[in-house]
Length: 298
Image (cartoon, rainbow, N blue to C red; front, side, top):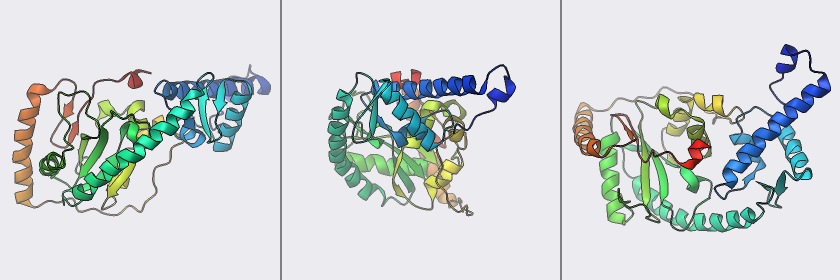
């Protein structure tokens, strides 16, 4: 059943039947908006993804019943793989299959990068984000990655990673729009500051993080990151954060390491600042490529 059922108690003018119809229409409208949003970007969702990304609380079984009803009413179309698209968008099913095959190929590039990057002792977590995380990629797309570093080492880790992607031929140019199969480290988080900055605590960011895939992780870092960002559940009430045992974490860095990181931070930020448009940069978080996509406005 739908979790939120207080409206009927507050509005006694509704009969039980009228209230049920009202809530059903509301849920179906939310479902249609979500499926339409992803369909606009060529990606039909499955039932689990709809449940996870929906911004209203609903139980899984109830959601499946609503989806069946919407298919029966021809509001949605359903594929045998379990995917849903809005009426008239059945060709998206073939497109998703095609793009998932492209994603499998790009995974080989990501794996090669991670095999080297995880040897950098300052990197605690490598997380796949963006369209690649859900397999909705085109041949010309790059690979978006979030990196969480050990405490007070973000700029050291970034320098090592820069050298690595250059050596591997995976460096994405700052001014080149289309660079397929390159690694785009567009989000950096230092473990001393795991909470996402307030201006990035949006429904768009919540859906990005809920869809993210951990490729490499040490010290339970990504779980601690998620635990530090409880606001995600406020946007996505059906999404469940990974359960883990909360343990004390020694985030102290050697004084020399802190000093080197501080110096590199001053130098890197000084280089970045003349080029900043809408990027968000600090000594503990770097948010690159923040130009608002159509996806964020929908």
